[in-house]
Image 1 (tube, one colour):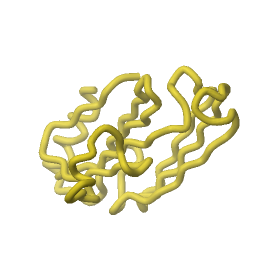
Image 2: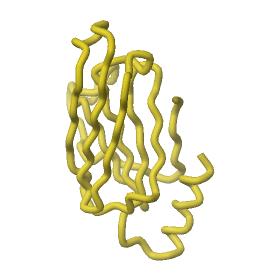
Image 3: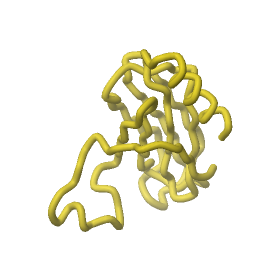
Image 4: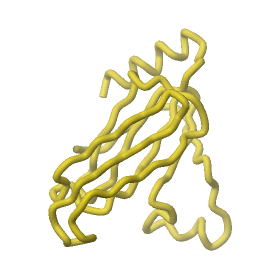
Length: 132
């Protein structure tokens, strides 16, 4: 549990403008995705707090498909049960090179290496991911 950090300039894949940009107290979408030089980062709002997670599984497909399953045991935020969240990242990924965390308020946060990077950039991002 905790907060992930990634050095470098990350840009959101969806940009907000006008009144939506001013409303920063909560993410508009349950999934927020950023694109960095060598990685993708996503924050996913789960249907429960971290203490109510009974089981959490995340599968990454090399083509960028992300499938999250979370089983909850309390009805504090939503009814107990199994929830699934599936979405696509903007591009291909290296599934062996990622780092994940869950915050206390139920945000699933991950950083995953983009596929097809030049070797020097790839090595730098692998080092960042392992330094956790």
